[in-house]
Length: 392
Image 1 (spheres, one colour):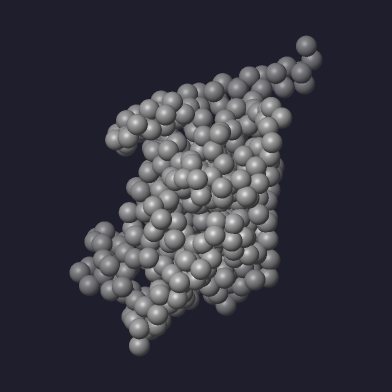
Image 2 (cartoon, helix red, strand yellow):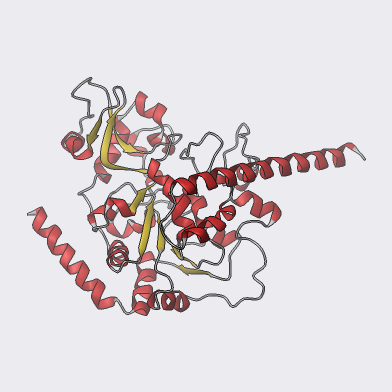
């Protein structure tokens, strides 16, 4: 055996052992988590039987979920497949690792099954065959409200941060830079602070799902709080990347309502703790910080879901992106997005449906097929009148 062949065989063996260990460890931890968060319903046993498909990404060895920057290219993704960080590379989803190399998880043969359509999905909702809907939403949910997303060329926030005089775009959400110079973050926060924008058609569609008793949980990457403004209560929300609704002193760790410091932010002042004068930071998750504890709800939500909506997200930032692969393999997944992303692109299933293009237009098609058009318009009118009265 020459040295090249020997190296390839050895590397492959090490990769297999590493991924295998990660999956076994993740499965064990998930079972423990599921027992702690079990549902009092007849469906709980079904959920537990399907936990093995969730992969290891949901229970990292140290138990912490850290917000990770998106990989810049495919080489960087492949460089960290074993879960150990390699210098100059960034993590990618361990839930996709076994699928890429071994065809595990949701991957595999679709056995000639007929591809789902948008009409099929809406009929399942109408027949109440899908009544535990989980939604994953990204910046594309809020762009129709006038809030720019982060990564769109030319129009995204990251392409328009020159005014903040920062060394590179992601620095505005890095703790080390925030402690060194918090002013750029608060300039951006002034633009994004709740109250400056209003919910749009898609937010109210999700509210209508709630009103009809169909929404199990809404997982959002957004920090604008528009889901709350649309009337979705906190217990139905997982704000995976944090919220302006609360703030914490970075020195004494006291917690405050975010509204207490709104006046300072709007007046271009850097909020300080009234007790210790420490720097106040809204509870937005910066790169490298732990995700909120509510993120652990995915351990029970996703195995229980019977339909997944993925709306307006690039599915690039981990660990949020990996949730798209956490539902059972038989569960339909509907992507309403500008582009084909994540597992919808690299490993689609027969039960996947992709409605590509403008997000609002895609949701309008869903609403029309469901026959909810007039009902949704009435809800929007009623909620808009409430906001108008509040602003007076």
